[in-house]
Length: 70
Image (tube, rainbow, N blue to C red; front, side):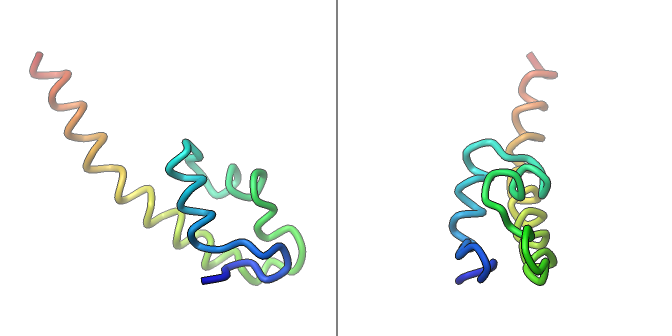
């Protein structure tokens, strides 16, 4: 779905940027220009970034546990 109509940015593009290493909404804004015009997309973009961050957290925790146990 299109999140930012002004710059034609989809939720897939935001997720791809997060998968590529972006860690915050400010990084997404810098890379994709989300919220640079009217700003109506920012709540949706923030929700997607938060969702992606939460999805990554269990993987990070598992890796950390492995490192601590070693």
